Image (cartoon, one colour):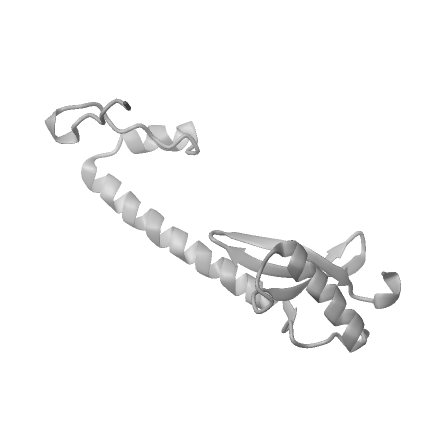
Amino acid sequence: MAPEEPDRMTGGGPPAPPEELPAYLVDALESQSPDRLRLASNYALSLAGWKESRADQELQAQSAQDTDEVPDDWDDETWEDALEEAVDKAGIASTKGTITTKTINDNDYYYLQWRDGEQIKSQYVAPVSPDRE
């Protein structure tokens, strides 16, 4: 049987901070008044929402094309095969994701990107130029 949580209203100790929070942040929060903690909480929630929104906007802005469109240098069947393989490896629905272009070592590559909770995940599709495949 797990130990019971101390009753916060009757003078038990403070709650344990999440292990993922850095000590400098925990220390700063623990030294604040309840009013300032509520302000910080509201700000943190607003900031998290804003950051998530920005990440979504960046993902959309990076979009080279819709997944239904075939890149100019690719023939339909070869592109569809490469995209289908990426979708299978990613384990996502074929309607999910956006095609983006990433440059690695001066070479351009297509990646399928999608949101999974708070994370943006990527799966390699193919080089931008099919002759580099």
